[in-house]
Amino acid sequence: MVKSFGVAMACAALGIGAAGAAGQRKMENAPNPAQLELTSEVAATTQDGYPAVLRITLKNVGSVTVDMPMPEVGCVSGDGGLEIRLLWHSLDGKSGAGGGCSAGSSDRPRLLDRARDAWIRLQPGEFIVASESLRPRLNRLGPGTVEYWIEYTPLTITPTEMVELTNAGYFVPSEKIETPREKFDVH
Image (tube, rainbow, N blue to C red; front, side, top):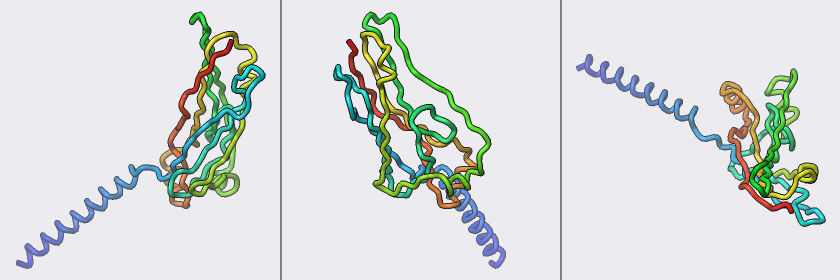
């Protein structure tokens, strides 16, 4: 009877260890609690009534404080950011154009040091607003349709760095998001 009790205890301990390991796996695959919402709206128009300036809002819609580098509008680097995407389709359907860019980075302080010293923190419900001009992109377009949207690309980090940040108390966005696509005609 004592022998069977020892076997039962060993099985129970193994079961607890297996359940703990399964729970740990679930934690590693748990959804990121850092949740952002991205919106844009026309803030100003041209003399012809075309969108000239967009107001871009990035809002923390989750239930935890979100930490991240201040998103810049333009070319997206390894620190992430906001980018206006634009496609133009000519009226005859024979030509079109899009925009893009590239960015790089240099030697920087350690990730945790950057998070502590340079990042912003958005409490639930807080947001940041940026404005960006479409005018330079529209000036050389002929008659056709312009399609545009905004993309937010989060900081590029490894899973190990994400764990390091989380263990230090930082919740960092990890999902790329974009606004719905909008269109207008250019005459």
